[in-house]
Length: 443
Ligand SMILES: Nc1nc2c(ncn2[C@@H]2O[C@H](COP(=O)(O)OP(=O)(O)O)[C@@H](O)[C@H]2O)c(=O)[nH]1
Ligand SMILES: [Mg+2]
Image (tube, rainbow, N blue to C red; front, side):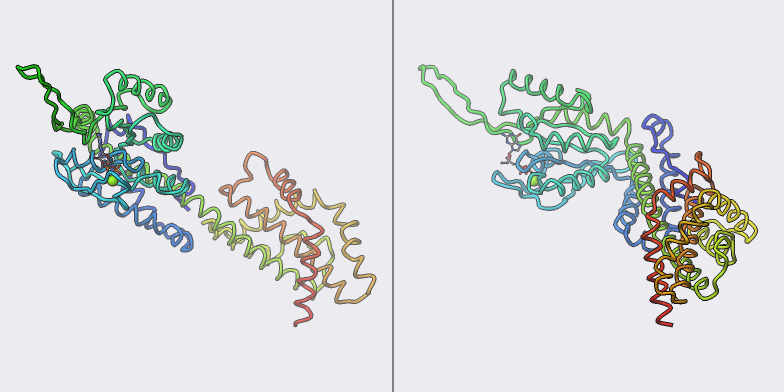
């Protein structure tokens, strides 16, 4: 299978800036290849259907030339207010009391020469528990081209964690200290300094910006000609100048590149996810196949006993098993190739187990048999050895396929050693014997 072996590299930002079209094309091609890859097991596809849908919508977003800016943060920090202030209209509902925004909400902001900017409002992160919050943070950072993480004072621990997580995804994140109107100039400077210090590992200072999305009216006192004081409230306009400047410089410089880059990162993350699931799915299918051949061979030998040493030699069923396992890993094997592989495998197993196989194992398995001296038991004992030998052979072959038709750096001997070491031989043989016995009784 191609996409497991082919490893997509996450595009570097600098590279993407140099050639956005190429990244866009690459992202789209990777997405298509992934969607059309017929070797992806249907179970894996079903499990990842949400991601495949997401990829589809990202690809539509790219086609429409949309850039998404999302506001993110605790309830009441002013996310909806900030987006409204950018839009200069009340597109998102705001509330002084509690989270007014319960789901993702969007509004179109401005047009760019090659697309337009969409603002996205999100529910407050503190309304959800830790795991959900993390998932939401991840989901938003996956989709949005620019994330505005809002706060209204120094960061709480959970805000800090959420921000750190957002920033690890290579995405563009701005930390916005909103409600700046509530602080004096000195307090604001100290707060910004504190945020810069705390976040220096993952945010440069120019990515931390103070705003007043919906400043409270200020109280003004005027003394008239008679020395009397007059007090009144003066409305204040939102202060978003620095944020707007920063956003526009990002959008102008990176614009569609940002969108293409994010799509590419998403596609490569999805590819990795699919690859991991495919590895797991293949493994479980391979296990089932090996198990079926074990039973088949075990019964065959139980019914037609052969000399024990022959159990380790390649036989027709083993060739079929190897070819079958190869298919699971996307390799088409000829009988000749399969026989050659089996020769290597049996050589390793004989070398490692020969002596033991000859004496201890046989007597230990036959121990129970000799007590009853029942032919069925003796046959089952032989069959269970065949079962075990087939299992080892299958495991060896599976390992070879899973490493891309290679023994890797360790070689076949070490591979056989570590497989043997990982198995509880006696209990496997007992299980095999019971299984064979019960099937023999049934037939
Ligand atoms: N003083 C002050 N209050 C603000 C500012 N921005 C928003 N608010 C108030 O904070 C409250 C919550 O705002 P909202 O936008 O609903 O927060 P959200 O839950 O993050 O969307 C509202 O009462 C807003 O008027 C600001 O810059 N300064
Ligand atoms: Mg809101």
